[in-house]
Image 1 (cartoon, rainbow, N blue to C red):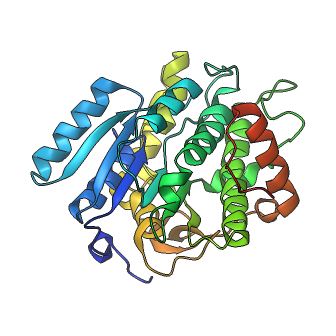
Image 2 (image 1 turned 180 degrees about the vertical axis):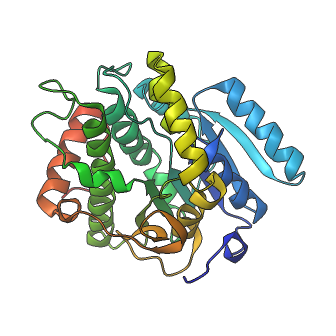
Image 3 (image 1 turned 90 degrees about the vertical axis):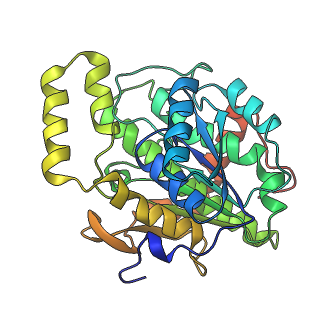
Length: 308
């Protein structure tokens, strides 16, 4: 792991990958590097126009890349079901649950869920469950959930998953990132219980400059806050190129442990991939089981025979 870079990604020829939110930032870099190593990559994007532009940009950089666009809106379960139903491959080797939103004003998804919880967790929970047959058809398939050190700000509130009692945007974001880690914990536990070699792991980019930081202020027209976040990105953040490295490590490196959490080595901020600290509540079997049950009820997606 010390000094690991994208040059160390093993050959991905013959493998199929899906990367959500792949039109920009971490998702685009992740998709590009998987394609560079020979994987066939589906860029799962909400915006068809931005997704097509990303595919064109990637093909211009890597003319032999096998990449395609998949229309996916994680804030709309009908879109998630359509994507899974139209998935054209019998096997799926790598699923990177990357797309997300951060610190937005209170809102609801198409299905009535609080936007951050609904997009960051429930959309990916449903997507992974619906693609599970394809994942199980690929020996040693990987599911990588992209979380954040911000998960340490708050545990989930199982009695108020949609933030209806009190909404604070950063706490809601932290809870959605805790949910990502609990999802990986429970998915890894269930895979082991059923004798599956599926590896569920988590990763985070540290502080990486992406459009996540400015999306919330921009949505509210808070230009001073948007400028502040943009300046912070330029001065303190590492690039999306560097931020994607822990994600790519978790997605491709042989020997990645189930339920591991990989991030930058220096203060969980920047540097080569390394094991990352996580809050104790993200390792709770009880919390994982309760969140899983609630997620199945809210999405209507069950994982077949994978019961607790």
